[in-house]
Image (cartoon, rainbow, N blue to C red; front, side, top):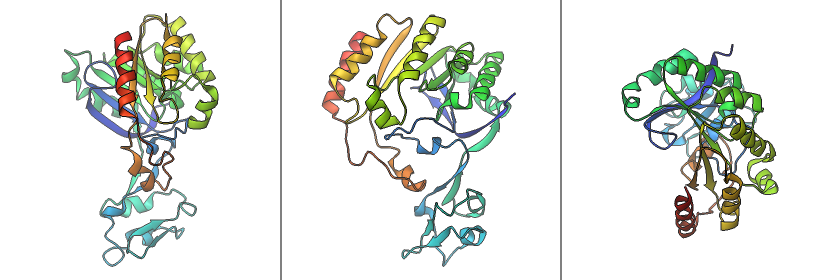
Length: 299
């Protein structure tokens, strides 16, 4: 039995990731590499270094990080700020535990199912009258399949309303086993265009669509919230969205929502030593308002 997984955040009092007031548990690891990802710290399945140079007080006041790094992966630039050479870094994480200001931290903490559910249950007073509960998100929770299955089972034993947020890219048997302990599933369908899907997420959409079709057959009564992030140059056109609407037609117990593209996670890329691939692209807000109004009139 898998009893531990890397968690990078537990968010309380969420109103947008399932019915009622939710406690969101964010697991690390994702098989997709979406260019617009707002949680890049979720992509790797293990703990990793996160660096905020605004909190670095420089080598004149502190050199804890350089002293602790046995690989000489950390130096100081002309502004006297620490610089991490990611090619040399072995992810030993020692610098994060030695940094006194929190400039270098670790994204990802190993937690047990009991530890997670004990935290979730502290919010149970908010669930009672509003169908609230726990939502397992990521990253991709199905990537840590055995853990997620067991977490959902234990949540149901504690009478906690359950949901997961998934991209659907996983072995169907894992998805099926999770669905048996779910009250709601939030399922991303980003595009029906396979070529575009590969270009912007790194994977084909075929498995995702197959899994959703199987889920609808095997679990017709499961509440399904399908969501599409509307992304500039990817799917921000009427044809793309209406194709998804047609795909969802006659599927049982389905609601459909659009999510607007945003750049709130852009700064995290620098902290992880990564490049933000969407550049200066912006969402056409007038188009989103139009297409979102169309979707709301249908669902």
